[in-house]
Image 1 (cartoon, rainbow, N blue to C red):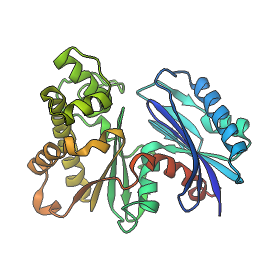
Image 2 (image 1 turned 135 degrees about the horizontal axis):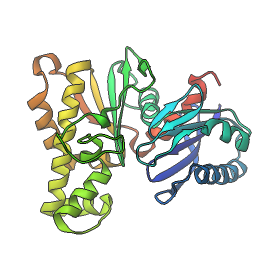
Image 3 (image 1 turned 60 degrees about the vertical axis):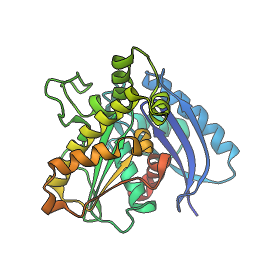
Image 4 (image 1 turned 90 degrees about the vertical axis):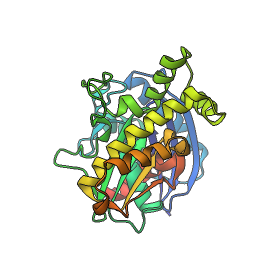
Length: 301
């Protein structure tokens, strides 16, 4: 049995675990990094947690895989750009290799999630699917004919930057109206604040929505419609078997499922895509972490 150190860097959380080759999470630790903006701070935090974990967990770790939000160059080991934090051209693999004394492999977090869904989740028998993360940001990853498709410049799947609102809110990518600023967790918080003048977290808004509050349900309905429109374009273009939703917002899929499906069906070419399935991930919160654990195997480590 092989064991890998897996590191999942999110927009507001850091999740680190030691994972076996068959997908068992042996131990894990989660930290809030909402207020961490320095790339060096992230390295220090990762190193401290990882060193303690490897000392306390009685298995031999052979490599480290890191999933990062935003654009990545997995061959160079660089975190190229993260619209949410502004991190740019950060050599994260080299720095962690020096600190942890392990081979380090990196990948975009959404690609990592899709890899995990293919190996451990509900897409083990599915060769053509689109994965969509809905969290602080929104991203996508694509499996075609059983293989992860990364595109000519390794940035395929950036559905978060499809325009869904003409002249909409400004996005961190530099343009207006992106899906990411109209349907992500942060956009849900912003829209709820504009309706109620209350600054609540997405989790607090979820609770209010489940209690039947009109404003809370309205923001999730809006998000669902935007996501449904974007996914209809994905389906029309790629004709995949499944669309898998992951990320923190997707855990409450029932709040926006009807609006998503209504808008999807309104815009999709039904005769060409009548059998496509839209479903929530089978890996819940751990897809990106499990994907990170796979990177050394897939990259020859």
